Image 1 (cartoon, helix red, strand yellow):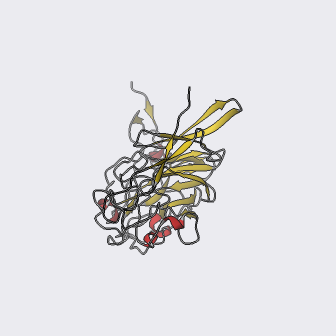
Image 2: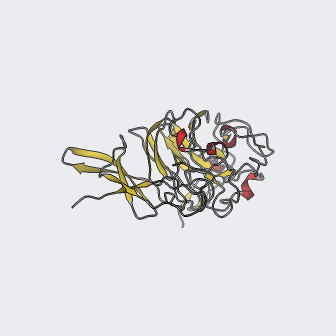
Image 3: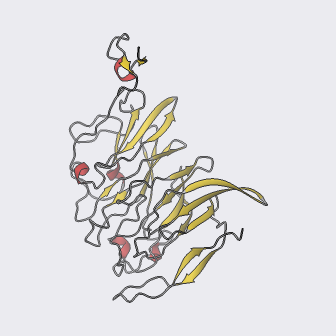
Length: 337
């Protein structure tokens, strides 16, 4: 006789004598329909989930293609009580959901989303839970679908894992007064976008985290429209960068920009790898970021200090009309052994 298990999803509503075969579906979740979901370039793409133990209960956190954050009880599939708030769309539960568009700061319609003439934000990787904070990245419409210079930035968001309370937003395009704002010349920061955590044409670029340091490591893609950048002069921080943020506050701990003013679609293609190495001085926590150019940049993941020297290498000027490339680019060296 096959082994059987009692489905937790059914246990509350059926007699305990009802059994299901091993491997049977315990529960499933489907988000109510909105215009935001089918337009998403990742509407049918597997993203994974965030998973955490909240006050003794296992919780699944999901970012949908429509850009809603949902918290579900892992045993029953029911929306987490007291998380988030009502969404003014028929079919959504009264609890368990956060509308992520509400915290990006752009005008939007709950059903339709952000007006397409301004831009589009979705997600192509899961959230990550770090010390009771849910950190959320994003993907923008870009590359093969983007035909205008306007778009919204793919800002990073932080939420309380218990309540869904909005905690912080990190601006991936620095606003006036913020570090790196001067790298966006001619007021390009006002209208252009992307610099997302997870490029739209790849869904395998999640955030990495070190809970002991309470830090998250976020790889980014490039600015709106590949292969030409006359409309966004400057080095364009945090284009093609690795950003280390404090998970509790969203404050920048350190960053490194691998490609300045990227017009080659040289965005970061893989998740940061965290590991510990042993040096003569003792163990060191490091983070390694691989790139499309076959370089690997390796940093002390607490301080951002490069493990091996990174050299500024002169680069040729562009022959394209109006294009102003960076005069140098940072190229990593490697150990002699």
